[in-house]
Image 1 (cartoon, one colour):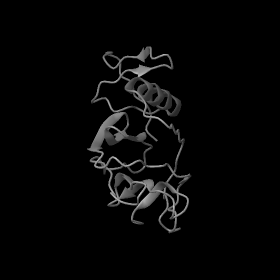
Image 2 (spheres, rainbow, N blue to C red):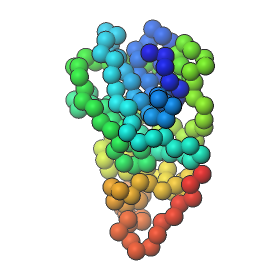
Image 3 (spheres, rainbow, N blue to C red):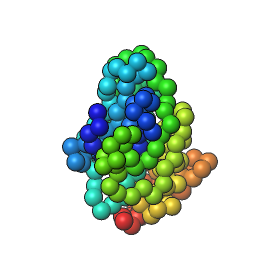
Image 4 (cartoon, rainbow, N blue to C red):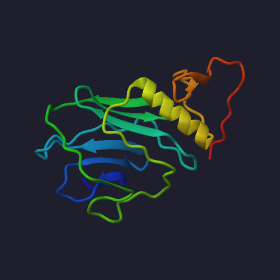
Length: 169
């Protein structure tokens, strides 16, 4: 729809729509249309995007389940897939809207990791732990998530009496 500050978008207006953007000035939105150009939908985050701090964002589409957005390792919002139509993924670009040059990202991206499949919870936690440790950031602890290594072994348990205080940028 052209509204918002696009973090990820298709490269041309004729490609299928699968974008991730900021809407309402402070919410994340994963937006898509099906291959026929219909059924514009997608979740908008409940949590406000922080300013002045890096944040881990993971958005996904599971064809059989729906859509969701994780913020700092915690599932923030999900929505069901209201259509059974396929979406052929377009060529993506970072930081710019497909048509409107002034609808791009105003901010910084430290790293982007893309997968062409839905990650399992264990895979997602390994990646989040890796990034948290790499960038010295804390994961949201309301979900009591251990920090794990690439093999899935706990390297810092959240149940520990010691405090893990990662520096927030």
